[in-house]
Length: 145
Length: 216
Image 1: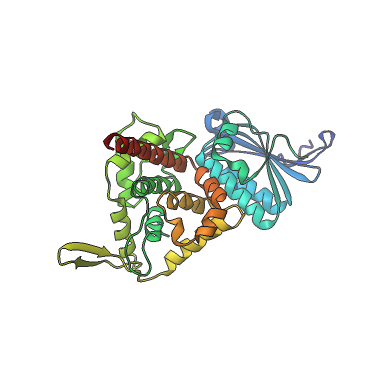
Image 2: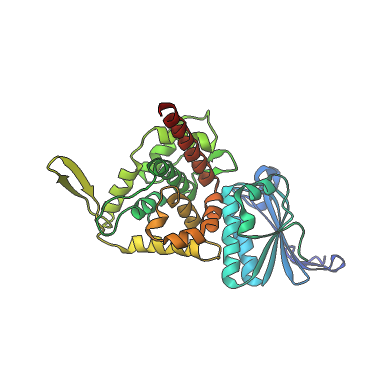
């Protein structure tokens, strides 16, 4: 990447990714501090693939990170007609995290955008299954793109 | 904005007579405890996963009801289960309904009337002064149930409180309730607090049935 390029935006053509945005979230803390104790950290990476805006979420979606998660998903939904939330690297989701996802899906539906949740596994899968969210949201095993 | 507890109790007020309605007394008592937990969750004082509750912040919310429950929770750190906390608050026999009614009266939505039936029995009524908040709650819940759109999380919570209180039948027809049964059950299952409230009600009703069989 050129020295003067923005670290938040890079083009990775060999992966067939058009654009990538990265940030991490920890309540009331900047990214470097969050990296020091990664216990509650959530990372969000965005990429565009075959017309889908893929929002990859890593770490924990809980009370510390739910607002940032909702904000990231809503921003993606507002700017794109097809958004996939890749939760394959999401380790934990609490009720407040789940509400953030539902609110983002609701925003997508209001805009007429497609919103798919992909790659859930482990504890996160259990939460989605127990709550019956598949009856309300589009949930895919793999990314649709 | 009304609290979840106030909205649930407001739904129970008969707009014609001012009387309070709830078709499932035990269910209503548990559901109102659920409403308090939802209010605490919305105030970001607690969070839950599939089984456990976590107190995030002990600082006062400004609501005496919520702060009393929060304080009770903060004093006991031996229990983290959502179900245990629902039972614990239920058995404290807090007058959650009375406190919600007092709040609605303070906000100019209801007024309190006392009278005597047969010169002996005290009768309390809560006629609506302003019927718009009740209409708004009914419209939101009807929309959440009758449409196939993703509801606001607050409306999901309220459907899951109104259902075990037996309040949905006061603004939905029997045919609507029947045709949208699956949707209602979907919304009632989404939140951990709702699922645990439903489990507590089922267990209590099973215990009552067993007791009735023994005495029969």
